[in-house]
Image (cartoon, rainbow, N blue to C red; front, side, top):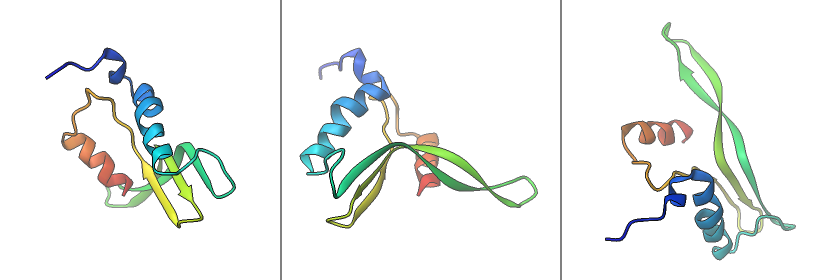
Amino acid sequence: MSELPSEWNNEAYVSLHLVQEMLRMAGLPARSGYSHWTPEFKIRVPRLTKNNLVTETDKEVDFLIEDCARYINFLVEVKAANTRINHDARVQLQTYL
């Protein structure tokens, strides 16, 4: 198995060279009359405090993708190649959902 170049360990590089290309290939241009990507989209995430109170906190997701022509609306969270999808990463993704 070959090693990935070190650039792939940078989340911004993965976003630029993989994720954005995949979105274009899926027919989701970055900007058009019917489609757009919003980078570093802020979402409100509920959080349980120590006193069992629910509060909200702001988190950033790498992209919000919207395509009004096909009713597509989803969030993209980019990870670097060396980032393991371990328990912490799964909790982060579950929190966003």
